[in-house]
Length: 293
Image 1: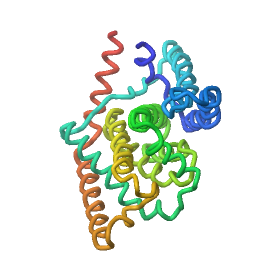
Image 2: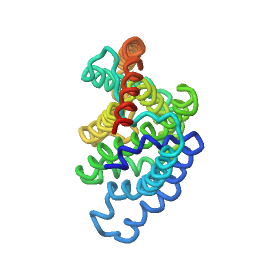
Image 3: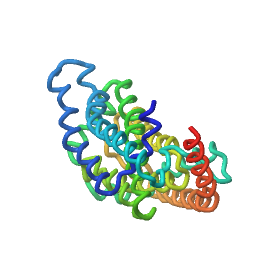
């Protein structure tokens, strides 16, 4: 539990955040493929969940040792203590309302960016990957890897570590955009780059405003769960089917307009009400509590 408490002391810069992504891309992908190669006919070792855990393992090991090094440095050098990964502040809004509205805004983003996403055809390799995740894998394996592991691991890495760290070094807008770019890069394919960047920017902005890691994990869950439930409910539809293919032109225009209006209203509400003033008080209280301990 001590390592979890000390995670705040590692606040990676842009360069260190890029290094984390490169560790996942090269070392993690190689390590994740080993179980499938060694146990070809094994249901467990060949599962997507095991691949995902093995792929993330090098990144988490690297973070573990960096946390130990940084914590020792903070013990001997007087520096401003970085904020905790989870130090939630929801301003004047109730947390349940924030979770609900942010989740709704996440669904609206998927609708709003769809015209841009459809400009890039889905590669056959990505189709095969998505079909394996949503159709060919067991529901339990898909649920664990896509609905649980992906939101937990990716939000811990991209928002909890990289964005939080970059916020200690550069301006919020730069940190949010850089974290969104690295989040898109983490997905390793151009087809997911646009939605990953758009969602990563929104998740980053929400994390900066609320400092709640559980909120962005929930938003990631909402996005992945909505995609999986659509695939499971309509297995006969192509994996790259667009909303425009499912609706008439009139209904699509109506849906698109509603998504823009709802997203705009929620964003304006968060700008006004979801402020970081209480968060600064919470941060001061955390530092005071830690110094007493």
